[in-house]
Length: 320
Image (cartoon, rainbow, N blue to C red; front, side, top):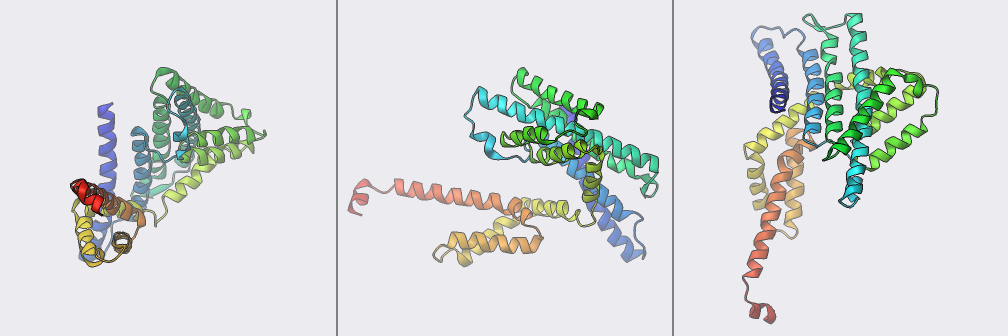
């Protein structure tokens, strides 16, 4: 398991490195030689697809897939464990169907013989879809519970997904509302949001006799959009700025400028986030780079104020 995690981290890091290196090499090549790198843009777009789905697989590995917080309202105990197992099983089933849709999409593109650039076929880039969804499905099933009964329920979710793929007549030309109710219940209990939205779409398409690969066609087209690579690059810029302590230095500057006025803490947070967002181009990058620094400084300030108050003699407090 450690080798698999190391391999995933290495592949994701190499994809991100290539995604950064290609545009930089394109700039240098155009300046020096007057020509660009063939296929640089399409390769970067497909690297975005790989980074997105590898990132989702890593999030599933670490249990950090985005979900509603309503499942945490259930008191800790057997009821909560089984509700989480049910949600994970439904999500694993939907992920299995989506993974099969990715396989069908890659097969159709292989038969079509489409090329990304430089002789690289499109179906190779599309393999990120079945690989990503397949890893997510397996990890959701494994993390369905802390014990084997919960994992057995997660494995049952995988079998349900396989059954839906092998026997589409189970849902074709039938009302989709029973499946939508199950998916909605799983969403309330804490199923990942991607599985809820994707599962609802898959059930609606399959109930009309349409293959799940149709959903993956739109997923693929959205993920290879020319504007989408800016998101991981801005995120990387935010991490670099955060690791370089640029956000902490900016915080000290704005605290010196605005911290002395009434309500200065709120003003400093608002102005700093506005400046950082304008500087990096993305509010999500600001949250990554500045949010932790602001939270740490706020906690430190509150703790220091509590300590200073505890050092005041009780007689002085009575006089006040």
